[in-house]
Image 1 (spheres, rainbow, N blue to C red):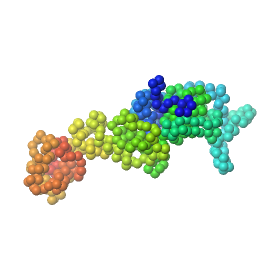
Image 2: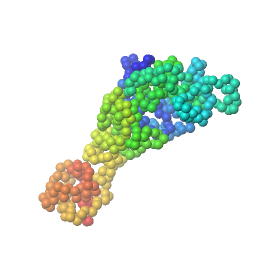
Image 3: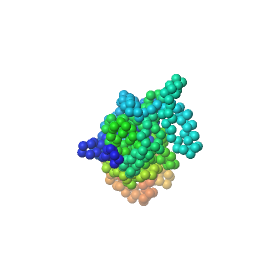
Image 4: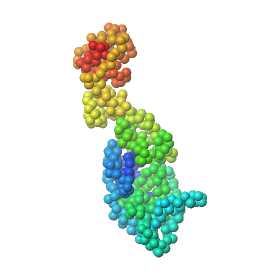
Length: 463
């Protein structure tokens, strides 16, 4: 580990504390879920604590509906944080840390407008120089500062980096080292008085005792800056690990602004939450993407050192196939409440009959309607099958029906008509269910029952 870094996993005398700190400025997507799950599952695996911290200091973009959506997404994935905090309610803590850094001479006011900064960056690039902030604000005389403020300019505040190199041992990327001289002094407070993520995150992590931060590799430079901030505040930093990012099928990065692969959309499409969790966690790693029985099982598969360094491309076909496999393996007890909410009856027996034929759990309601709806619209049979269906109607056995009924009944119809194989079974399936494929009829037939079967056969042959 780098000097002063805490271990990534808990020890006997230090419980692991991890957090997910989204900004409620849009809907969480699959890439956000990757960061969320890696932190939550590490805490679960190590018997630690997992915190939800809402980065809601951006007054213009934060919306309360997104706060509610984040909570709903976590609940859907089966994650319950051990604590929740909102940065908008922690301003006093940030003010105190700000004043400490200011008194230590690590902060300085800068008055450039965004347009002026943009021009300076473009000029630097045109001159072949890196577009770094040149610390021009440090060269302002007191008189010039006073003149700028008299014009109505309000300063933003920058943190003065120490320079030199910062090193840490990254649990995904290995040994990391960044020259702080290659980075601009970061803005930690806007001219409207609000604080920025790079600063508030450090203050919060120190205050909450966060021991490890797992986040996307696009934050590597932020980590170098934040390690300097931890040192300036005299706080022990957490361990840092930077995972590879997910991209769309076209190779584009995922963004809350575009809504691509939003968790709410996947939920509405019927993708299983446990499949989303497994996919977001295992894709782009040495572990094969596969169904898991629970989040605990998924946590047992997690090893940050087995994550790839390359971006991982999302394949929706693969995710949907994983969702189906996950759904087919779910025991009745796990889905009972969802089936009841969807109006599906029949208990465990019906679930075990149909689950192998479902693409989404919503399809169970379709099969329940097929089995139990007295008004099911049986399609008319082709003329060549009318005689077979007529004989099947005549030979319908009395109830009670069980899983042996189908074989005995179709055997009798075959003997009477000479129909066999597809010529026998396909017309019966179409008449009884309206579908060419579906659950095993030996198990589905008892849910249809004799009265509905007789009515459907009658209507299929035009009776």
